[in-house]
Image 1 (cartoon, chains in turn purple, cyan):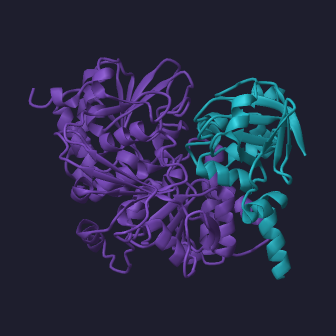
Image 2 (image 1 turned 180 degrees about the vertical axis):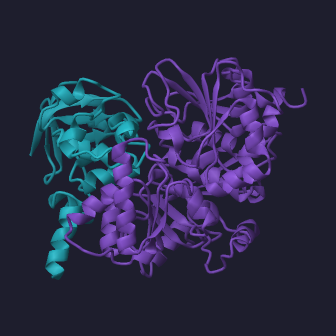
Image 3 (image 1 turned 120 degrees about the vertical axis):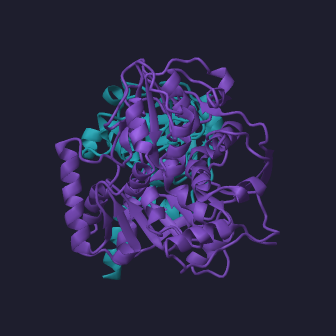
Length: 419
Length: 164
């Protein structure tokens, strides 16, 4: 019987001849990633009484969650982290470089066949480039600093095969919201998810990132897209050629194989307060919005900004709406500036902010008041997530977010095109 | 032996309501974290929870962010165990790594009501409620060992000391 991607790569990284689902293995990751939580990890690491991180070259630290520092305590965190990474010789990207997941991809640190563990739940992102990547806790990152090893349970795997051609202005965000709505927020709990099929094969890396990023929202341990020429040429552009892809066997044993034809899929929206509360846009059209967030690790790339600008089509942001545009990285910011997109957003009345997580986690830069409604391109709409527990967050694609910004209400973006 | 009252909640209790994002990058000791435990779900929990009390919830408990404070704040608040129909995987790991017992016993979740007395013997694999016993399968040995040592860091410290 053949092996799934998860079974193969975890067997390899644990240095075992074989590993089966349910087995607990000790694996050594190729990369360990942490962000603003590095100060807390350092504190835990301190309890172990070790002076040095065992393999500093295996780790990367990127400041992105509350950047630039919004309060003295965040500033203290950042300062402490800067001193620590310098002393330990850990690769470091300071405030302003971008959101951790975007930076890892742009820096060529997400590679086919790599095992990546990150102290962030959306570490699943790197499966878009054929890595096995999963989120872990802070104590676990401290343990990795100490030993370079961590226990992992070999998961069973769900294969999701997607076919069909998406309608205009319907994106991979609509696809993943639809899948989460169908499977539920625990639909892939503890499991590995392989995204496959002709629709996925045609997707760009940016589109695949959206799928794998939000695999976390169906409970998955990791998401994976088999690396192909799209992936290889993306990495070549970055100057990365040193990797060995891992593929599932054609006769791998899956817990489930699900097939979806997504021709005619309408834009999807996740209503408050769970990500699986998904409906076609027609069910929420006309709802008044106070704020629109375009950005985050899910949808803050240049492709997302282009799409939003196209849908806005030179229209101003509606009266009473605050639109926040947060490019996911400095590279995205610079490209968007060069293409004239940032100027368009500003002229329309939007605020363009520095790269970072922004208000997605409710810490700063546009948190919500009680009773306010936000349409966000982010990945979570939990109660209190973006500020007040009495605020409401609707998750959607950049096209839907842009349409909401210019009309002041949830609107099918296809109605704006050409009008 | 763990003995206390049950605090009962529904499905998909996420880490944002267990420990709000607005505090995640604040510098906070566990005792301070305990004061914010379940703040956005049940504002009276932190003030009224007693040592040994257990949380009883539906499926996918602890979904969302990887923030470890979601486990740390419950331990610091004195929570003896969380019994759920299922757990989100990072929360499950964080709980074990903080020495917090997490058990998947769906039948017990359905039977236990808010405020009920619950008793758990983790080594024997038994939960007692209203004269009924619920058996649960033992956790994997690797996981039990971490729990017995009080979490991943004490466990690792022990191992590092042994290595000398």
